[in-house]
Length: 327
Ligand code: ASP
Image (cartoon, rainbow, N blue to C red; front, side, top):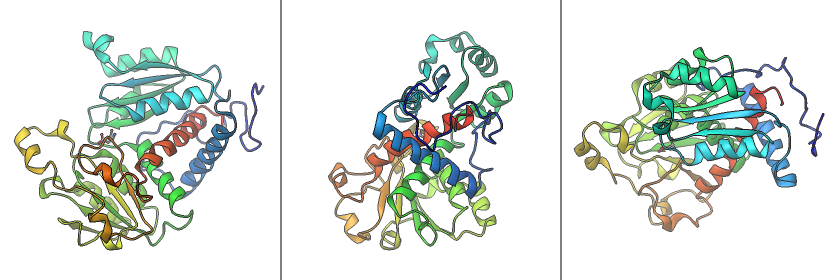
């Protein structure tokens, strides 16, 4: 029974026949355009509901285990907020030092433990493939909140939802997306580049030489017939760019701190540089930023990175509701 105002478009009751019920979200690799339309449709409804009633009881009685082995501000708090806005509750574990992980417990055992108490698990972990290991161990759905330098699928989904919301829906085809910064270790761009291959876009990669987009991702993009090109300077591609996706140099992934010092600060976006960009375009960043975007640009209407975080709440609400059979 519904216990609070329901959107006429949001069905209630566990829909165990929904194709998303009980599903893991580990990568963007198996998603198609129809999946994205569905996710963004539900996210749009969630936005409307949050605006109208703030919180509602769609996931009342459900529990999320929010398990973070790496630092996080946005991903962990937006999943937490998403669950609470849907009327569910959260077991937050973001300091594994104080959990049995510090006693040497394996990831699989920690996951098996948490699923005894929770209905869905969100996992961030420093190792590529960790979310897949967790999903293998778990009966309940696992959502990958970043597996090392691998993927960050829910970020890519919110990034694309941001692009659709900020540029007019349906107009992504024909657009040029420029990814800037640490394309080697930045997991968000690995997922986003893969997801964008579902559309008729052009991809530019601008990075220092040692931080280029991995060949594996470039091969996947090429196999889908999407034009892509690498550059070492932003000036060449900024004027044609519709979406500039800036990333932080991932200091924590460098084995040699000297290498980090060489490339830190290679690219800095500021109001002066942005004079060369279109008037109608957006600048995104998964955040946190270090120095890649000067705060002097924050007030520019093209600066979409703070709005991007809010879109993330609605996308994560949608995913939680979907895998729990409530959307
Ligand atoms: N927050 C994003 C991530 O977890 C981006 C970053 O850390 O630079 O991948």
